[in-house]
Image (tube, rainbow, N blue to C red; front, top):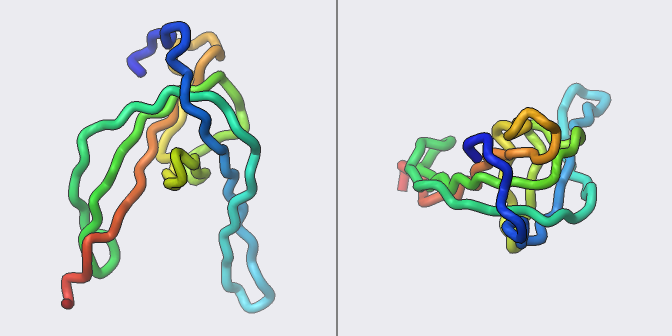
Length: 117
C-alpha cells in the first residue's frame, strides 16, 4: 500500500467490517460493542510478526495491510474480520489521494502466556 492503485482482481478476499461503539452505564463503567457494517472485497497482505508486552503476558502481533474500495465509515478502533480472525484497525488512509482505495493497517494480538506462570 505504497500509494499505488491495486491491480485488477487483487481485491479477492471477502472481509467483514465491524464498527466500534462505546457506551457508558449509570455507574461510569464502559462497554464496547462491535456492529457489522457489511462485507467488502479486499486485498489482505501479511507483514512481519513481532512480540510485544500486553497486560501480564507476551503477545504475538500479526500485522496486516488491508486494501478495499474507499469508504468513510472505517476508523482506528474498528475491527475487520478476516477468515474468522478479528483485526484491530490501527490506522487508515486514502492510499492514492483520489478516494478510490482505502488502506487499513491492522493488528491481531495473540496471547502467548503470562509472565507470572
